[in-house]
Image (tube, rainbow, N blue to C red; front, side):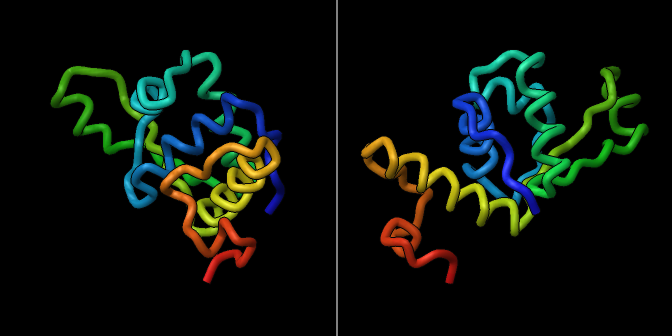
Amino acid sequence: MGTPRMTLQTQLVLRALLEDPARQRYGLELCELAGLPSGTIYPILARLEQVGWLESSWEDPAVHEAEGRPRRRFYGITQDGAEAARETLARTYRSRKQPLPGWVSAHQATGGGAS
């Protein structure tokens, strides 16, 4: 598993995914959560999927047809991806000497890693 380029936009997408790591989210939902346009979000999602941090799947065609809207692709952060994202984001925050957000565990904040 590689590490993606950790731009501010990538950090915003990861933080949105980490709000509820068990939940699958579609692209435009992530646009709203991260406050970024789709032209920024989709390349980031593709890179995160390439390094193994995300998995994606298309929704059942019957669902979108019944609702009369385009088909959605759902993205979910993998367990390994969530751990790697938390560690990487924690390092980024520590290097900027910013307070750590609530989704970083105290164990990771002290350099202990995942338990």
